[in-house]
Every structure is written in structure tokens, then in C-alpha cells.
Image 1 (spheres, rainbow, N blue to C red):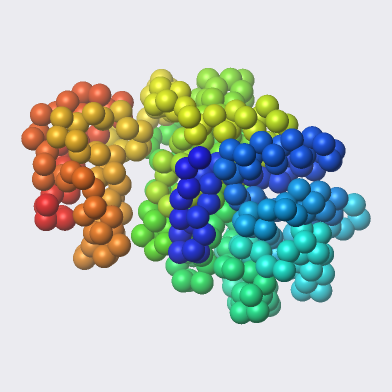
Image 2: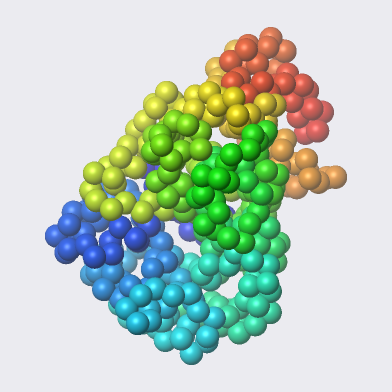
Length: 381
């Protein structure tokens, strides 16, 4: 298992982590097998978006002997009339949060995630109202370690990341969603009609969001890495062919700012498939084969951090250099954290001998030699 820092939260989390929806309605023995397998593999983080009371109690029992297992609990996710609901009513929000803590058997949650904010109007209500005040009070009282929000809209998520108070984003990341413009209707992301027109390169808003989070230390954990399962199904995938779970996971985990993917596994076999990312070779992880095979969608000239440029005869990690160059692009002066991360690379852009071997291997036609010249000039080495 690999572990990454979840932004500035202070947490180190497993890159493959757990979503909770697969545990809804699951029996005790099956849940134990799932948790035993996950914990044995090094998983140490779970997202608890659902307010289903039986599921919360089940997870609480499974984690009773694992007090160091990190929990991302949600504010504003309530249970009403036998079903899940998102609420901003503070009486309901407080009752649901207390119930969550009791059922999970915890006095403190690592992340208090303000649930489901997909419109700027809703964000303004949360940010300027009692929900945010309540989140601040929970943090001050030590009942949550840090504050996060969940969203599918990069414009909303960017506003949250810029506040300096939101430390974690639960955000939907996959190559299909990343092509689309921001939208307040999450269901539009799943509609086949949304992908009928040709698209060239990614929409700039999600790309800018990931780079902002990397620069500012806002940790991202990922939901919907498989596009609700659509990307795994040839008939439903907008690319006309299926991606594997490992390819989807690797795509999400190579975006700037991303620490973990919350995998909503419904059974032990699905969990084992997700865990197989940890030992998968470069060929199994390679998502570029799918993306470059589609004439309708192109990503020409944009570094996808896929690693096809390797190996460099001078040992330069070209994808990392490109990432730090992109992160520095928005600033007149390079932020110290970006400069430090670039500086500790074993080999720098100034080591490039302009042989062009990387460009012959790049499936996205990135002008790598030009990028290396720009990076060496920008960073000074």
C-alpha cells in the first residue's frame, strides 16, 4: 500500500481507501471479511457519506478494535423516513452528527465533510450561515480534526479551496467528467447525450482546481472514479470502450492534489480488484491506451502524467517536472513549496540533453523538449 499526505490535514492516508455505500445492507460476516482484507492490505481511511443508521453501526463494530483507522464523517447527511437526505436544517444536522458519532463509537472524526454542495448558491448559504459556524465549533471542540466539503462542481470546489478554512475536498474525478464544463446537476455527468459532441482537451476548471489544491495544500480524496460504473462498461462508456478499474484508479491518483480514492466496493471481489492497483505494473495502469484511441476526444499537447515519456537517458522524471511547471504557471513568483518539491527531484529540467526520445513515446504529443527548456528557465536549474 502507498500512503500520501491528505493536504495540510496532518493525515497520512492509504491511496486505496473505502467508500461506505457497499456496506449498506451487508451482513456481519461479509463486512468482517471486507474489513479484514482491507486492513490487512494497509487501508486506513473510509468515507461515511451515507446516513443509513444500520450501516453506520456496522462500520462502528468493524472498526472498534482499530482506533487509528481514519474516518471522514459527513455533516448535513441525515436519515429521514427510512432514507438518506441532505439537509441544512441545523436541528436535523446536529442530531444526525451526534447519532453518527455514537454509532461509529468515536469521540472525534478525522474529517468533518460538509455534504453535497454543487451550486454557488448552496455554497454561499453554507459558507455564510450556521452550517459553517457549526463545523468551526466542532473543530474548535476537537470533535472533528479538519473541515471538508463534497462537490461535483469544480467552480464551487475552487471557491471552497480558496477560503483557507477548507482542508479537504471529496471530489468526483475521472477522465469523462474532466472533459465537461461545470454543472450544478450531477446527473448530467452520467447522461449519454452529454458526450455526443467532440471535445478537445480537458475543461480548464477541473484542471485548475487540482493544481490549486496541490499548491495550497488542500487534500483531495476521490469519489466516482469509475463514473458510477459507466467507464467500466463498453456500452455505457463515452469512449466507446471500457476502462479497467486499475486504469480508472491510476487516472485519479495521477491528478495533482489527490491523496486517495474512496472505493465503494460492494463485495470482496471488487475490493480485491481495487487493491490490485497497488501491485499493478505500468502496462496494467496505463489509461492512455483508451484515451488516445478515441478520435472524437483528443488531449493533444497536454501532459496527462501517464509516464509514457520514461525512461529518460538522464533520469529526469518528466511527468513530475511538467506537473511542477504547471503548478508554477499561475504565479509571478514560484511558491516556496513548489520550488522545494522541484528541488528534491534527483534530476532537473536543466539536465535535459534535448534528445527527443520522450516526445517519440508521448501519446499526447506534448512538446517535452520545449517544456524542459521552460522549466529550467523558470526554476533556474
